[in-house]
Image (cartoon, rainbow, N blue to C red; front, side, top):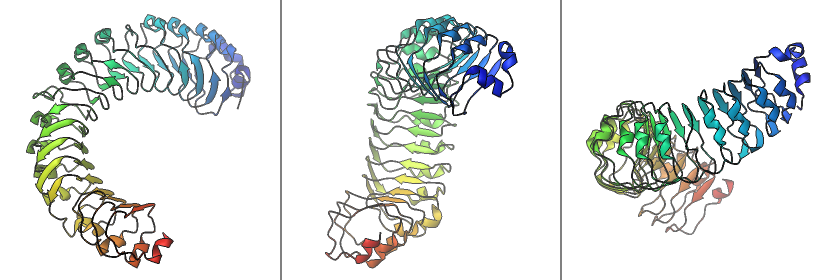
Length: 443
């Protein structure tokens, strides 16, 4: 619906009160077109919410007259063009949310003039250039999903009010400034999917108010400090996957009593996983896959009763798998593939782990047919040499079955037709008999 300001205000009974309107909420109204220039006449406006429409073009210059404006939310539209420099002259502004549009160009230097600006959100635009060296007194800075380049400015370490910093999904390079650890009010620090190098400053692990640290998918190196987590009493998420971090996993990680997600996959970590990990009683996701861990999988993992995902694939774990791990009834995803584990699953595993949806166990194939909640089985590229257990054909909700590149033998029974929900089945590179049951045609 394309509409002018006067018509719109008439529709909501405010035409005669144009000059006195203080708050205008037009969110989620399926409005299209450009913002009318006469929005600039709403000089008493304090709050303007344009979220989730289909507005196009840029915001009109006339809106620079809205000197009382404290909140502007134009997120989730199709605005384009450069970020207006006149924003910097609205010196009452506290919240500016322009996320999920198509703004381009660099961040105007005039933004640093707004001493009252508390929150700046430009996530998911096409902003270019570098992060400004001066960001004022911001409490939240969100620049995720843009085209920013260059280095994280050292001056960012002086933004003492900063609580949320998200500059993920850009092309930033260089080191993480040591001074970031001086931002003692920081609660959320996300610099994922960039091109950062060097080691993680140890000072970051002393920000006592921080709950979320995410450096996934960079090229960070070095090791994790032995005293890691002693200064992070309320940390809930630690995301360090897909870097080049080496060395052992510190036992002090067990001091993260509030930790819910520990993601260290795709690094160069080695050595054993110590039993202290069982003290992370709030842990919901444990991702340690694709490293060089050795030794046995500690039985203390069975103490993690809140665990939903367990990913230990592509390591060098060995020995017999302690079946107590399967006492975690809420487990939904288990990936232990590409290790050197032995043993078999308990015959009643379906009742022990009733919520399991994805199971990756390498050579541990027995009893899968008892897990009726299974949706995906990935056992490709192992050394399986037995028949497919007949109980497997009872998994009527199975969506993916991959047993490719093994040495499995025997014939495929007509019961294969029971797998009506299958969307992908790969049984190639095995030693099955040549007879293909006609029931496959009904899948």
